[in-house]
Image 1 (cartoon, rainbow, N blue to C red):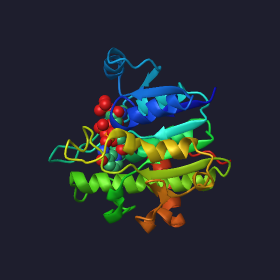
Image 2 (cartoon, protein in one colour):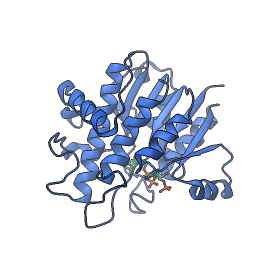
Image 3 (cartoon, rainbow, N blue to C red):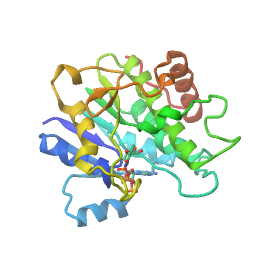
Image 4 (tube, helix red, strand yellow):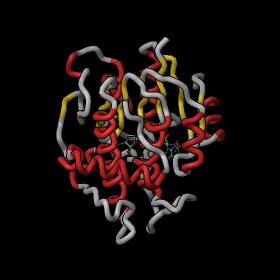
Length: 253
Ligand SMILES: NC(=O)c1ccc[n+]([C@@H]2O[C@H](COP(=O)([O-])OP(=O)(O)OC[C@H]3O[C@@H](n4cnc5c(N)ncnc54)[C@H](OP(=O)(O)O)[C@@H]3O)[C@@H](O)[C@H]2O)c1
């Protein structure tokens, strides 16, 4: 049976992506930040196995990757936005939004065997974002919204760098839409099925439109929201910086 792994599948869009991949016949491994959250999901009726690890910790992210085997599909869905007024710093001394949203996906991708398909759940907030390689972690000035948007742009550029390095895999990014979850609140108009749809399509479909790589999608259609994500020089410099920050290098295939 084909195997799928979805980060941040304890809640929201990631949980629904995991549900739908199971409906498609995948053997799904879910991810929660810790045993308490995994236990809450099991108590709510989830029967798929869970692996755990706080993506705001490099040690836990590395340990998570080390415990994972080969998957056919990996969905980097976990995401976080700060509600605090001041710049959040992790146990690793890194800005937390960047670490959870971008660096953790980089570390997992680098340390896991290369799957057949990778989907990075990004955001349309990248439209107004910017990768500043001299201040990736917003040490000069920080706001929650800017840190979130810039981290999602960094994650998208990492996805496209991975697409170039793993020519045998399909690796794409997706904006799920404005979806009602604990991140976005009840004001968001879309339900979880709509939010999961394009990621699941990219993970499973044999339609020619889905069999591409290095592309940003919204509602199953390619879109360009920020050309910096497609800039190969930016991608390579960002990957080099991620390697410096983590001590982990991407596979060369
Ligand atoms: N909702 C939207 O309108 C929208 C729009 C654009 C993009 N997105 C993106 O869609 C993805 C899913 O978001 P969502 O709306 O479904 O949000 P959500 O309901 O808050 O789910 C986020 C998931 O990520 C996990 N997570 C967060 N920080 C983590 C950490 N440090 N370690 C491990 N897991 C962590 C959460 O775990 P817990 O359950 O323990 O918190 C949860 O499973 C995110 O990447 C988000 O940026 C969402």
